[in-house]
Image (tube, rainbow, N blue to C red):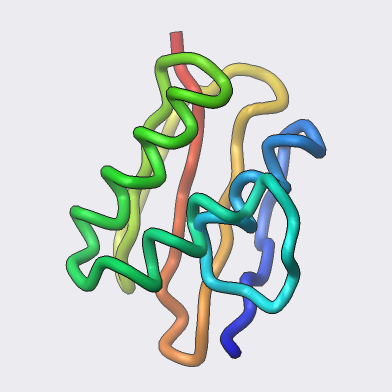
Length: 101
């Protein structure tokens, strides 16, 4: 099974666990189920990003932002303890999650 590899994290532990729930991974805990489900059930990056954002908004309140893709640049302003940049799988699909305003 593919793994989620954190690149940069400024996020509370509970939020990291939710990220692992929604990204497919061999680590099973509450925070990452949403990302896991998104990658398992959806194929297009925009739908994966939308699923992750919706789950984070429901669990941790609005306003979460998510980018999913193989190649992108970014510069974001985020709230403290609400930023995660990770890669997933052998294809190294990247996931950027952050909360703003």
